[in-house]
Image (cartoon, rainbow, N blue to C red; front, side, top):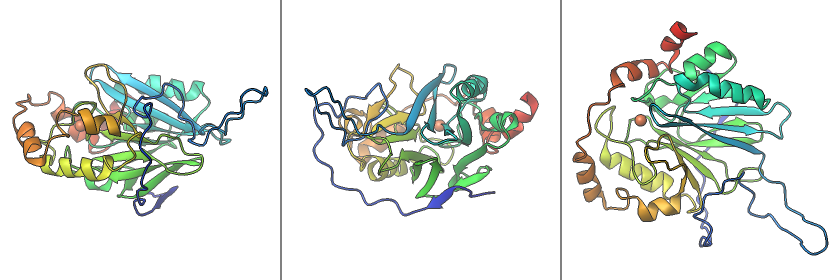
Length: 295
Ligand SMILES: [Fe+2]
């Protein structure tokens, strides 16, 4: 196990935020830009402070409706990149984007041990051996890097902060972009299955707990600034992005009180996940077992 390029820090003190503007809940379809951008129009000069160093791509795997996220610091000479929640079936697509954009993939990360698909992290490691797999220590899974609450995962001048958000599974984490110079604004939260757009992950297996999920979301995600962008691990309705403020207002489950939430989650009557018996054992070793037969 290695802990290279990671540093542990306490979860940041959350700053009180100004009320969001009317556009705050609107997800941008461009690279997030620093909040202190300024324009001087009318004198043929347009001055905008440097936009974030971030290159960002949202990728989709249709069989499991999984989103994979590619983030890179394109101002760093090496253009270091991370993939969040890659899927085994789409590894070749993801790696060709990395290659075409001239990026250097350093981390292949999972938000949790998935039950509905095999992670791509193992297969990626067979194709790009220097890449390190990342998952939370609390997941009980094997990986090159086992992260703990408050850990920061650096790539170039950018970093992701790991927030513990158990409840869907015991080891779920939400990766949140940093708060500071050069970091993207608004911040971006990769919530895995803890918060889905207008929904949340089920809590009836893999050490799940509806009470714990409710606590996690309200303490670790809904305390972020309301304009923070939410990028979930899945969407089944065609949504691509939401915001903390939007989900605090419109999430049909997480806006309820704890008792009502527990009642909703106890009565979802969902079928047994059809991939779970294949996916979970493979994902407990970050897909590496599966990868050796596919490589
Ligand atoms: Fe999941």
